[in-house]
Length: 238
Image 1 (cartoon, rainbow, N blue to C red):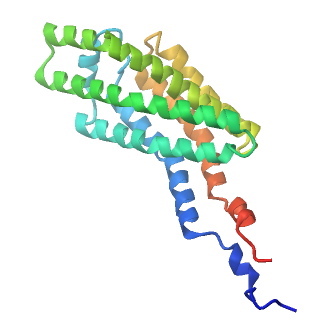
Image 2 (image 1 turned 180 degrees about the horizontal axis):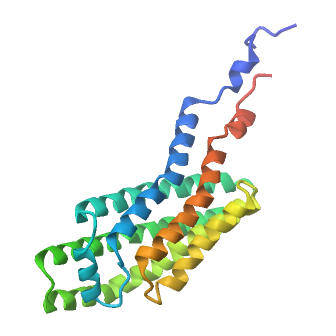
Image 3 (image 1 turned 135 degrees about the horizontal axis):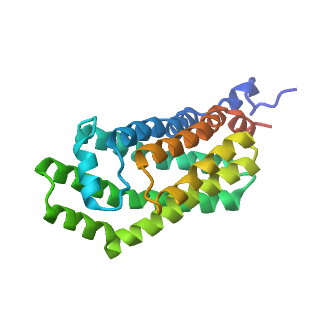
């Protein structure tokens, strides 16, 4: 006999709340969309990791896209990416909580430092539009090597390289994504460790790095869209 307080259709209690569906869709989008934007932005920007300001300003002056459009693509990508990291943390948290937590915190710290590098890029664009000069080159070199930018660079390497690397390992250990996808995320973060200190051409290394990251993030986005976990954890009337 059915008790008076229980509804007749228990299946309705297993429906996933709309806000969880919207949240998962948003996180899934943020896991994938930033990387095509960043790839296009970095390919068209030329080498933004040169040894001196003269090369940086000359590279920006020869960009194939308008500087504002290029900066907008990169900025939008960097704005969405932290939400993608949060989604990855949620996928790995149940089975690899420590790696997911540390990787998530480091990733967000690394993302905070990108504001400084966006300002550096904007300054380089302005210098290229005004015309290269010895004063601009000296200012670029001074700005790029001062204490603040050096600290931001260290935090960026620790956060934006180390954080997602740990997230990739956590996702693999949690079996949230295939091992090949986790390996792609890890490899995508190892490449900048080699490329940046060696001043390798960022218009080549960055697209390759973010392409690997995109390859590993697509399975994570599909995993985020699965609602099985919410369905299993939905409250049931007994």
